[in-house]
Length: 381
Ligand code: THG
Image (tube, rainbow, N blue to C red):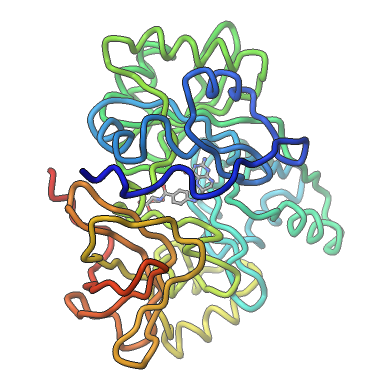
């Protein structure tokens, strides 16, 4: 009935070449029938396997293996690594110990968001920035050069493989050992697979729980993929990828969609990751303090859309009341759990009130919409 909710063929086929990089898992991903791709950090990222809706239910009930190699690792290593890492983010890294993962907004001198990586502290002098879709390694290397720092900055050959869903704990323990049960949220530890030590973190771009395995041996990528599928047959393991519906419902922001350099972390509700009064040195502190003191002018909110089909967002959809534009939809999907559309929108000051009724101008016509807080409350649990 709702199969038209999201077309998987909104565009002509994309022609592959060397600028659109394969991953060490691409042959496996194609063999199990990826329905389409997007490009992220110049690399293939699948968008669905059965359909976005079928994948959504499967993710919430079983366990999926995701090729998220496109979450590239920018490595910073050397005597000045900790100083440089801190310059990049308003999040206080000073108390983080090796083995920590930290979700960390990166901003420029005006407070504009350059990225929102997960930072892995590998050692006191070694970090990985697990970056979102912008070439921010250039910014990091440029700063290191301009500041005359004693560090090396480069993209490491590391391809994360995520295992997500309610049965992820069981599957990962079967393949990587019982010690994985002890890895805390946003921590990583060494695990052994085929004689190699991999880092496995309790992170991932879903709210269903699970792990990300940092595959730094491309030759072991397919054996690891195969081992997960063999060990998980009775768990109904399936291929998956970051799910548009699930991540909107969970309020997970997508760089390039919900966040750009025109946004600051306070209006994107990343204030809990901004330690503006900490005794640390980072780029953009004065700008962010000024924004905090003036009060943000916009705010990321959720919207329910009164519709039973939602197409892809290929430009920002205006949110209006009467003649006035009061916000913009940045991501949207049809939610089978709510039986209506769900969206993320950047709303102007004064239009943040949950329950307020507004109109969204989509390419397929005007939709009635209601503002709601994030994350969307899950009606199925
Ligand atoms: N994992 C890894 N790298 C990544 C992502 C990831 N790089 C790209 C992209 N995703 C970066 N963006 C995010 C956004 C949200 C989260 C992680 C990465 C996230 N947020 C949790 C939340 O909002 O509920 C909690 C954050 C916290 O409490 O610290 O997980 O997914 N390796």
